[in-house]
Structure formats: structure tokens, C-alpha cells
Length: 274
Image 1 (cartoon, one colour):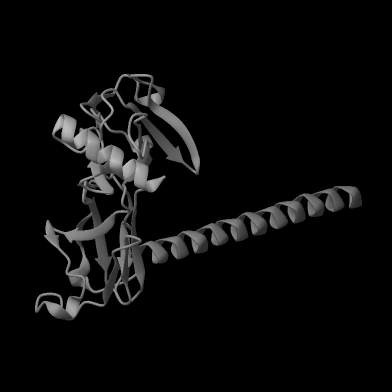
Image 2: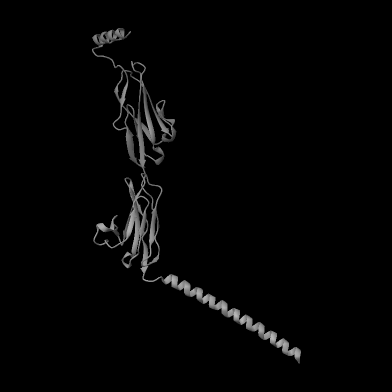
């Protein structure tokens, strides 16, 4: 059988002047593709070898192991229906990518006139998403010598955001010991979680703070917030004074109540005696 097929190829070559394709062969320029949200991206499905004039071309989207049609019976379908098109012969152009497009895409080509009549190629697409404005928490006032933490977080960016902190529009270095200006600071920054922790607050740590969330798709930052550092705990002292004053008032009211009750009792006894 193999000899007969080989003879057939030589006969066709002698008649047509070329050797027909042994089968459809596909390739892609990149099996792992990154795209920014809202921007176009082209998934390449290149047909390197084929003899069939009108092969059947299909694209499928695979999420969580479940395939669905993207291009079927010569038209775009599914959630890409109005956002994509086929670029001849088999490339898929997504015009306006969204985060929901992150998935694996399979290009399938069937060529019935070829000896190897089917081939497929799998492409992984990841859509990068710009961070949104992070939620920042900065204490209004802290006391010298105490510990404190500033927080920063956003959950929309993909890949996950990295965080940077700024004071008075100047970026805080990840390691304060690396800068002569911050060498005496006791803070540490967690770039993955957005936490800025001070082990011991100093007067010099006061200022206007904001945080920036950043990934390869872009960045966003929260509004500036002022943090004051006091020598003494003014707020604590005020609360203690207020508590003491309230206690004194309650005590005085109690004394007056007792005295008033005693006076009324004495008056009634005196009247009865007469």
C-alpha cells in the first residue's frame, strides 16, 4: 500500500510538475500571547502546507476545560461575534480585547483532499488589565516612638499589581538603608501587599503620603493623605481629661442628690416633732 501511494505521487509529479502536499500543517508565531485590555490582538494560525482548495477552518475558545465556538461555518460566533474577524487564511483578529477573553484558543483546519487531512494548534491568550485607583489607609496622627502601618490595595489589575509609596511626592526606597536620606527610618514596604510598616515613628516621618499600584498594563494612585507625628499623645490626653471630667461631674451630681435627699428628710422630721 505504501509503495502504491509513493508511485501515485511520482505519477502526479510527472503529470503536474509538483508533488502534492502530504497533509495540512499548521504553525503559529507565538503560542503564548499577551494583550492589553481594550486593544486589538491577532492570534496567528499559519497554514504551512495544504492541497485542499477550501479547507474547513474553525476556532474554539477553551475556558476551564470547556470548549466553545469562536469561528464556525465561516462566521464569528459566541462572545466575540461583534469584536473579532478572520484574517485570511486562518488568523483570528480580536478587535477589542476584554479580561473575559483570557483563555486558550484552538485553531483547527480540516483538508479532505490532503493525505493528512487535519491539524490543530493551541494558543494561550492572557489579557493584561490596568490597575484601578487603590484603596489607601493612612492614619491622621501617630505618636513618636509608636508603630504604625499604612495600607494600599486594589483587586482589578492583571497581572497582580506591585505597590510603591510616596511621601511629599518623593518615592520611598524599598530599603531605607539604601538612601542617606532615609537611613534612619524604620519602615518596611511589602510591594506585593501594599503595606508600609513603621517600627518606630519619627517626627521626620510626618508628611503627605500616597500609594501607586502598577503592572505592565499601567498604573493608578490614590489621593494624597496627610499624616502628622506628635511628640505626645494629644488625643489620648484629651480623652483621659474628658473621662476624668465626666467622672467628676457624675460624682458631684451624686453628692448633690444625697445632700438634697438628706435635707428633705431632716425637714420632715423637724415638722413632725413640733
